[in-house]
Length: 430
Image 1 (tube, one colour):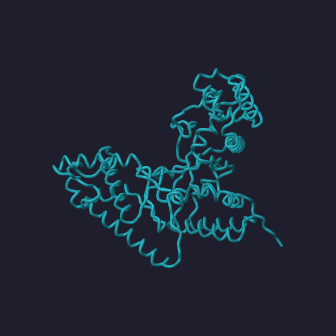
Image 2 (cartoon, helix red, strand yellow):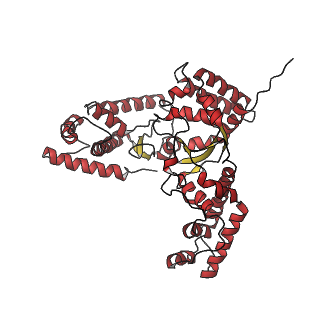
Image 3 (cartoon, one colour):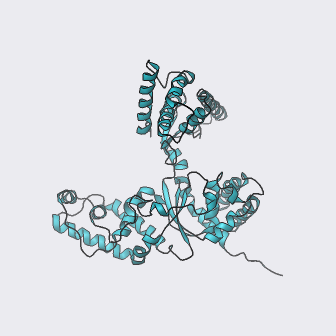
């Protein structure tokens, strides 16, 4: 699957090329002109030192990042893949080796150093690394990577909700890497249901990540530089309950709306467009989510997942305050308390059945499209809401955690390690 240049990058590239051409009095080509040659005009555009917080400077950097991506695409087969944490909304991957590059980051660094031709060194490093991979894989038939592979590994498109015991999490964050490594090894060894090869893989991944921290220094003091490790440690030692992981859009468009719809006793009239959709055989679940008003008010439809007010969002610990791009955010569960209290999966199924009968009565048409997909989505949504129902508890904080597809697939194994890390240790006395 190929991924074209994201439209925001394409637009920035065209805008920067146009303005530079006006400034320079010649036709500027961001892809073919040398970086040193381009820098003369870029200096005029910036009007001083590069400042990434200035919107005009951001546009310049995005335009140059698009040009860098296009150059590396032609030279090394680089492709764009979605990356929601990135400023540009996407990053570059390469088919022959697992190399992820942020063009915006590389350009911002070069502009900050007033040395745009440093981007030639970036391209040189990419060529060197690719050559090493080609040499080591000669004759080996290594599988080429595509955007979907990078998305699974790096794009945090999945979401799970986590109930965190703040005291246990803070205790873990206060430990040194040496102590944490011992505790993680011990938890993995006591996770009896894990196959030996999975234990070995988890120990290599988790303990090696902890081992890259500064020795003797509590993890809390290292959170700004290692937020992912800190989030994982908080999960292992502080999470008491978690939901399954599902796509962010699924939470926003199906799971939480289904919760807020509740159990209405009556349904609103259907307008002409809704009747037309129903006559086309659209499954009642999809129509219900569009037309039935919420019985419980969502506090902030523009907030996180359309359910958690932005004013309530904060890091799960003050040590994260200086960290960038947190993937685990503490939220207020106030808006979920009442709808979760009244949530009943069988009652929700009955609402959808009644709505389907109501639609059929109004149209004389039974649903013919998307029934299998709707059933699968409904089952998954009700499972997630069932997980969530018991998680809003006194003394616990609710967090929204973003994770990649690869991280989501490893959750069953990590949950066993989490259970082992929090289980009491049995000491035999003789």
